[in-house]
Length: 125
Image (cartoon, rainbow, N blue to C red; front, side, top):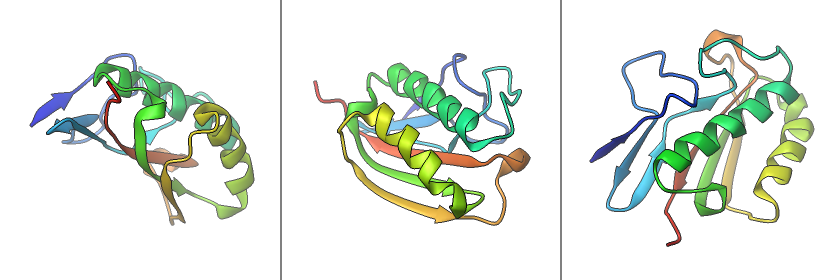
């Protein structure tokens, strides 16, 4: 088991790794919309979803992957009424790639964030 870590993404705020690689598969922790210094870029779903994808790209890059290598994603929303806004941004970043996905509304996310995404990926090369 290999721990994946990058300073180019938000930092873990608990006893966990940003991602783990096992047998070529990459399992991310929940990636949130905080900047690398753990500040929050905005309190809205749009700015936080963009930051989630910026962070996700950095964590995946540290593991030798890219967004197109995602096999499964789980999206956690603080409010399902924000699904359409999140989904539009999600679709733009994945650019036609359609991994399996679950999306659930949760009562609360860390630091009262609006969105969190975890993924399973495997490098295509």
